[in-house]
Image (tube, rainbow, N blue to C red; front, side, top):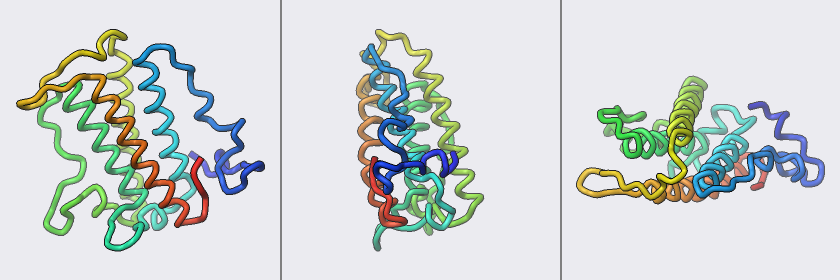
Length: 192
């Protein structure tokens, strides 16, 4: 990602790109239910990248308002864990995966507590998020169109593939609202 790519707005200069140049609009027009849900995820993932684009480690790690530990970097770390938990552990059934970020007495909420202004932490967060997104997309690519109603075990409970995908769309949507406010507080750029 480069700031220049998404910093060319002329119609609305406080946004990233003009509406006609928005890269999210270039995503495929989905036809099936699976493709619709997957397209929503792609759209929201790209939006997360756009919201964080052009910021340094200090800006990405900047907290919203005390006592909240929420930051854009924390959101990237959190969403990496969300992708991993739902796609790898629940949908793919991979057992024994270690947590991406370990809880400690100092960091009871490691996704956000560990989101510190260190370029290495930023690089690792993006690497983890991109790896989890690639793994999730590989799982989705292999999912037959008619498998959204498949019921999978989840501990003592069961979960339906469709419900997981809808939940992920909801998770990104909620956190991108947070990202809008965090980014606006950093440099005044607003949602798109």
